[in-house]
Image (cartoon, rainbow, N blue to C red; front, side, top):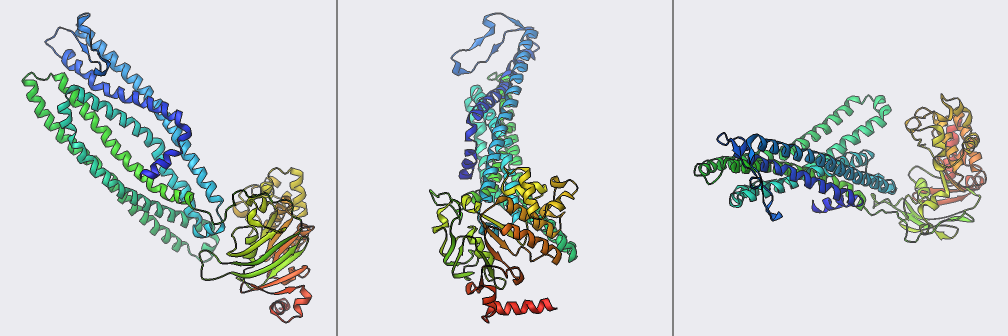
Length: 606
């Protein structure tokens, strides 16, 4: 826990001055709470003593001040005047304590929330920059649960509980000081029970931490089921799987409930333990005090001041035990977050990576091989060598799973090759910054992703600084302007999650407009028309023709009709390039391409 706690507190470093002032205020608050038993002594010894028509009072001042102020050396005080003085002191102490407590609590919460916000932002920034392999390993639901739910547990600890921790620490210190001032021997005997309380609490902390991690994992599982169920609601309905999804969620919710109950059962143990030992101590003190008062060795005020301080000490101890458990919970929740932050990315920039300038000559795959990290026994690509010259349209065809999309993903550095090199203008793409590399490449895929934002915002996603006129020009070139203007609010219409309010052809044309506005010199088209009907495909093909003009294009396609006019076609089979040439050359060679062409010709005839 220590490591995680220090790491969490490290995020509060830039709030050091705020925290220092808050700690000072909490010290004042703790001192104010400790003054209550001190002020009770004159109440019991003077104000409530009926045999004293007139009393002189000594206000206790801490020994470390080197003095003791006796009011009875100055002037005799009638009882009602003594009470007036004590009552005014009580009101003043609690007024100052209240202000210090309020401001200290606010400042610590301010620093804590700021630190947690910084941690959440850093976690999101780290995750959003991870390579594709990371997102293949962690589901969206689990990532969302970590950034939201796990960090919420941390937020509770470092904002609300951190303030309470300082409050109780200083209150306990003040009470111990008062006990020692009254009778240090009796104080020593009274607090000997604390180790019997604190040791079991500390041992419980490790188990609480494990149970918290288990509960958070179950919460992540629920989040995953929710995300999949809601995103795939159409599939759920089509297969009448509502009951199955409900049962799946119910099982996850029950596992979360059991894990949470284990945590609650352990978290609640310290409180009754502390209360029992506290009651036993008080019973012993009452027996002892009764005899001391009878023999005159202790006044009623002395005893009540001591007992009150001891009672008030047990409350901070009990609260600190609970806070310790909450910090353990936060440490357990932070484990997954720190796993993300500590993960070494598989795709990263080299130190001193340089900017990629304007694309001038060629893209070269030089003996490139690749296998996915989570499938180490199967190579997806093996010994691929291919050159795409500036201005060329090169098509990649082949059966599903041959590695066509992977080849394009390597150019974008979603992954790095296991072997071989990819070069742009003769330089290894790993020499360039990721941002400058990807700025040179636009991509339109078969599964168009649109954000739940306006049509205009989706088009300008790759170039936020673009003017409205440039957005409209890109939409016109993509043949999207007409249907956008027919939307309820035109370019300001929110298109829904993943563009749910648009048809497939409309989503694709919006994606083409987005790529047009980016105006990158290299274009990747990955099955951009495979899921469209004939009419939509015609519109999209016209839009793609506008997009492909004056660009270097890599086209991935199953439909051979879309790549007939490519400058070169590379046929990929079982991770290797088996044939290259133009459409006419490959059709006459009698290889895989001819067989694919004949199969699709049969489909067209039917």
